[in-house]
Image (tube, rainbow, N blue to C red; front, side, top):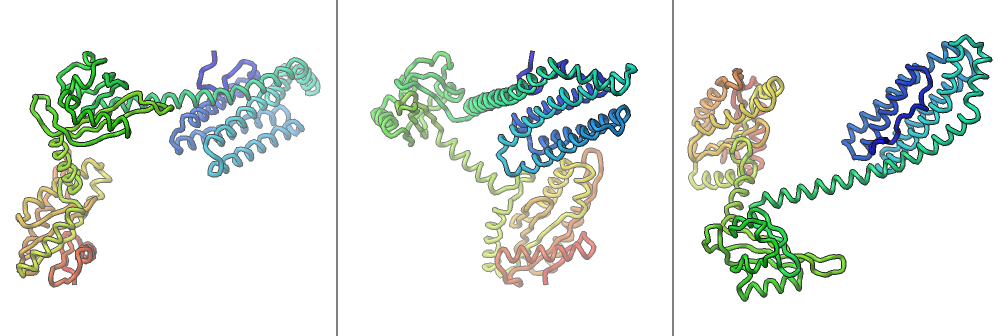
Length: 483
């Protein structure tokens, strides 16, 4: 029985009678089958190259083994020289095929490589290796070289020749047909996986989704819809959605909605509905008509969302868009807004604003020795310490990695900023316990004072960044004012 994902099934007719060669031939066949499978299922490119390289490397090892055996029993024989030349031609052909990987389409390259390897391996084993192995076996039985060659030639003629031609034709066909079958199976599996994923998404979404036939009778509904109407899915199958959601489809307006979806293919807008507790609320409803290839409507898909929940979700999305996911600090986007406000406030109050660029010293070592999880712990701890020390009108933001920006407002000047920055440096330098290990990081801080530094928002940040590098180069765990 041939497995569906084997393009080159091993057959006893491939056995040469030389155990070491037969084991190596089986290994080559196994690597060829692996390569075909990776091609078919579109494995990661690096993994595909690895398997191809494994096959090439093992082929070189196998050729070396063969040539040692032929050299032992058939030294300086023309057959040995020809065999070695065949090996070299094979390697040249493989290198040429590898060079086409950026030129040919992936599927065409896969077919070309697998077809070549299958044909060459079957031909080489059946016609060349088997022939020379029979000579070696004859010599091992005590024949002279001439007797061994005549015996081997007699065995390889006649029925064996027909067998070789039959096998080559069969294996060429088998390789191409099996590759095609494997591709069809792979595509079907991808489609099934996509359908399962789509079903999971629909089932887990908070929006209420229902599907009806062309007459508006329910054929499917997700858990959110079942919760809204307080019914089990099984009890709704075959019922009219107009009956189940009368507040949607019992109104005159909703008959117009249904008509609009039928005529134009889609309708979306705000209507009144009821939540799971029966309370009236504003709902966003979309109704879409699904047509077949002939343009005839076969189904309707409806999706309803509580507008109050959509507003809450929008607020959450805005919050995520403006804050760092790891630390919860303002991100670069929110920092720009805070910096603009701080500049306006400084202009009005006549007091200084310190724009500070902070970079942790020794953070990379924590990441490299203890791992990224430990690095995240350090970043969160530093964020908490910074927040505790800053005043209400100040801002601390994380730009990414171990880089932070501080906005310190309502300052009298450098001395006032220096007092606060010294406390920050001392607090950050305190040991941090991470998974039972004490780690130490410090900070290098670059500072520029507005309005002494009459620059744009981006220039202020760049000047603070430049000053931070000066602080780092001067010994770290210190601050430096931009001049």
